[in-house]
Length: 87
Image (cartoon, one colour):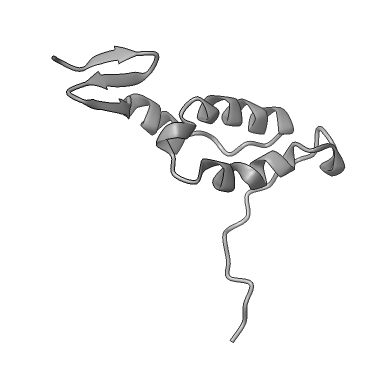
């Protein structure tokens, strides 16, 4: 059986995997600047959660950004990841 594409998922040959174009879309997604942008990204990514190991752990900080305690409509800025420990 050849692979067939169903809803952005390649199925066939005993395997189920994400379509390469969808992987590329996630990698190239613009940095969200508003809560609505974070929600849109999470909605898209949630469809593929079964393909992403530890998805809930990875998505937790993004889900916290959209929580009421952080305020809706807040401006989100990209900060470089740094190690907070000093030696």
